[in-house]
Image (tube, rainbow, N blue to C red; front, side, top):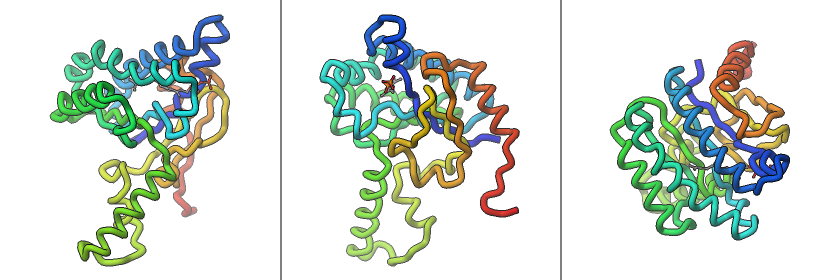
Length: 229
Ligand code: FPP
């Protein structure tokens, strides 16, 4: 049973370019796929899905693409927040939201508060997220708590996990990356320690309910031993 799935939604730009369309069109359709996958994953009883929507490295992209990506959450939630609430889907995020325009921050926070009572799938959106940054922030916060006398110094992994942005979530069971690239790109390095990896060839805009079922089927065929025999 999958409790937590992580997805690197890659290939939007190339998918759009192949059809002679702007890269941003790929992101727009990619956002539509988020809706489809969230609804289906919720029906399947998956507890949480963490989606890599914007990395700490994505600021290197051209301004017009960054502007478009900053506007996407508003387009997405205006269109789908009602449906998410009706389906008991809870929205959350990881990453440092402060870097985004105020309007984008407000849209995300609004989605959080409107779905705070929901107890179905948790749709976690990674925004301005980078795993090394997350780990450094956690180490810093832990050190500060030790200095302030709030916690004992220790090398306990569970204690450290509490300082991560995903502290309330189980470890990732399966990580999917679309579009054929086989890298982690600074995504959930700590949380993926025992995850099954699936690198699929198609682009994120081509992901759909059927592909989600294929991934889950493949996961169920794998023999997870967690270092045991
Ligand atoms: C990677 O594809 C994708 C992104 C950097 C953006 C993903 C964001 C979304 C799908 C939508 C986010 C929406 C909400 C509601 C949070 P790429 O552009 O790197 O593809 P490429 O490798 O083909 O260039």
